[in-house]
Image (tube, rainbow, N blue to C red; front, top):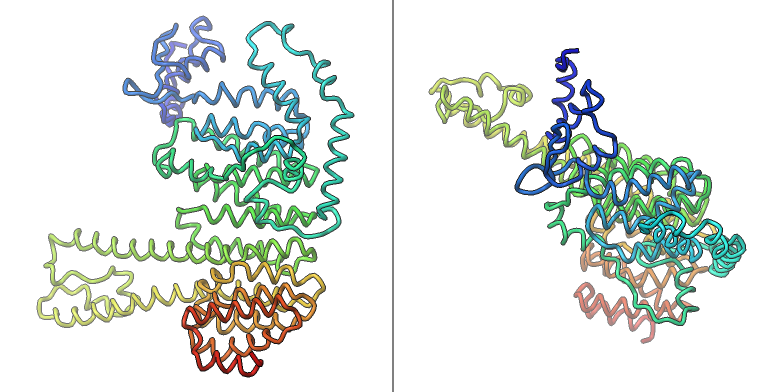
Amino acid sequence: RDGTILPALQQKLNKIESSTMRAACKHMLSLDPGSRLSAAEYLERLSSSPGTDKGGLTTSSSGADGPAAPMPECFGSVFFPLFKRLRCEALSPDARIALTAAQYAKVVKETVGVEDAWGQRYFETLLGPAAVGMERLDAAAAKSDGPSDERPAAGEVLNEFDNDALLKETEELIRQLEASGILSGTSFSATEAETRPSTIANEEEKKSEEVTLPIRDDLAENFNQATDNGKNLSPSFQAMVIFVELVLSSMRHVQRPSSKLVALQLLLRLSKVSSDEIRLHRIVPSIVFLLQDTDAIVRASAISSLTSVLATITSFPPSDAQLFPQYIFKRVNHLASDPSVTARDAFAQSIALLAETSLRFLDVSHAIRMYEMIDSGSALEEVNGDDVEKGDVPEFSDELAGLLGDSKELASSSKGSKAVESSSGGDGEEASNVLINSTYDSDLAALRNAVSRWVVIIATDASGTSALPKQSLLEDISRLCNFFGVEGVMTCVLPQVLAFLNDRREWQLRAALCQKLPSICAVIGRSSTEHFVAPCIETALTDSSEKVICSALSCLTVLVKLGLITRVKLLGCGSKNGT
């Protein structure tokens, strides 16, 4: 009653990091209603330049005069109009996803400061000309500063883009999907969906008389240049989490598979301009949830998006060191034997990048662990430096020394036991290295065992649609060989892929194998190449398909250039086949 703030409330206010926001909250608690401002006035002053408003509320924005304003400019320019439309116009989760896709380019520009021309064209293609036209009319009406009667009426918009136009456009899209084979069950390349607009966009470009230059997908590159690799972020960057949460909350309740695909593409684009914390703790779990979707095309798009997002993560807390063996690999394991060839093909394309990313997580986590052990040892030496002579400082901590069984000798400060301590310290160092290497080797073996099971399942699949996943597995075989190492390639990869030559139904698979064999031979060396690979190439030289024979000859040419096959062996192959 006397105007003072209670101590409990003051403690809560002190937790607010921004001094300006803390002062605004205190001002909102004024007992005199006349001294308080309206919500709009508070927003205006918290987003304005430095100054003092009525009631004594002082605000400041970014600059040398004071701290940054707690309300970024994108709140008023982008988010308030967007959420107002979501509240009044988009009444279903599918409509929210469509509206979010239409506003994607504008939100990224305002929050991050980077233009994404490729993403803008991609989502405009997905929405279609009619929906894009309606969105542009709404944007033009929102920018109008005149009275409401000067803006286009709702009836005028419906007359220009009526239901008949939308239905005609939908029928045209369905015909294009049927012509491309997507609706008939034919698999598609998930990689192409990330590198260029969809087939529908290409068909529209062919029909268009205007010549449009291709747009390169350089969003990640532009973001790194504009922010100095994430070191110089704009004040509005933190607001990106609001847009990400909007997509995530809407994606959980959508009904149409097409809306889920659009949401996945939105998350994939947003992950390129988001922090590692948002990628790891918000985007990844939501994509993992869609791996269990009932639609095969959603599962295929989810595994492709998940692999791409995980590959962009550069830093993670120690608690997520076991992310892959304990979470990711368990969630994607069922895709190796998925009943849909579309999902199996997308998973086969993602195996190599998933394996490489898991190995990078393992290397980083163990490097951090070793650094912490060394750093803790140095700190212990500095603490005990005043009481113990330098030569008598234990090499390891008491806990580690207890594991080694000679803590008494290491803790002794007697000068007569220096020799014993020195030898014990050397043994302790060796034991510590063995302990670290043993943990790393066991973790690496667990990762390789999981990936090898997927390779075996895909390579030994004898169904009529097994050729496409096998070819996708070969596309990135060099990255997979680097993950397994020489021993893993000899025991897991090489025996499985060489069996592809026995598939007499698909000549494309045999030709693809001959093209990728040099990448495998570069890992296993010349001796193994001559003993195991050269006889298989001899078999391919007598294949019934001319394209397989051409691929085998090209493979021999590359092997000779790399020095992986001797002249004697090469002449032997030629003489046996009459060439």
